[in-house]
Amino acid sequence: MKFKLIYLFLFVSVFLEGTTLKELYDTASPNGIYDKELILNTGQIYTGSLLIGGTYNHIPGTFTDTLGANVNIVGNGAVLDLQGGFITIQYTDKRLDITDCVIINGGVKFRGSTAGTNLIPQGSVSYVTFYQAEDYAVRINSAGQGITITNNIFLDTYTTGDDFVNYTSETLEWLPTGHNLVSTIFIETYGPPLVSDNWSFFSDWRLNQDELRHYGLF
Image (cartoon, rainbow, N blue to C red; front, side, top):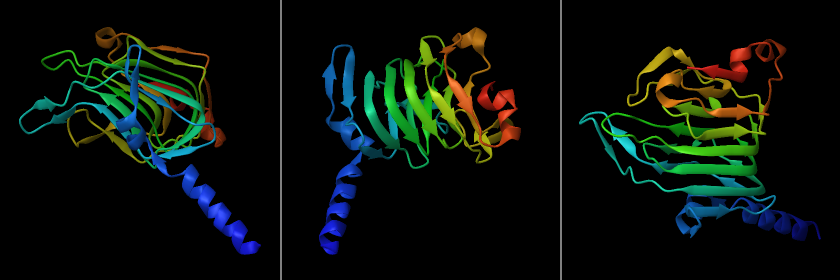
């Protein structure tokens, strides 16, 4: 009987953790305005990071794969273990909407550019609980207008050092990590995101007293 219970536990664990976000993304179908709609299962664990949109090659100074996709992630109470990575939409004019899930060990990034063309994403993050995000829970870089961050819970984001400059592998002291929500300082260029009704907390009372740890502009 003991061995049967062990086998059952292993089977359930594999079933719950057997799907990556990338696998789900690759097989997702369109729905309405979305090119891909990911419908997650309640209580299931999905692993790994996800990149939507283009990349930048700093040697020739060009963007690649900038078409991107309009993506909707309907969480239904699922757990997303990003394993130190991010759900990132970047260098595209598409949108990413995420709702109703728990994200651990990672965060969400909106990253844009006006270099040569407007590759600025939009989207929303709502009713998401972030626990122990690495670097940032939500990072908005060279974007802002058309992004909504509402009704989320941010808990204990932790630092890994200084962040990287957009387009390069250089790190700078004025780009610290370990903040729950960070938006671009260039509000006049990219417009402000709509940020409301979120709850942010750090277990370390010293960090919890630092307002920039909750919401900063870098």
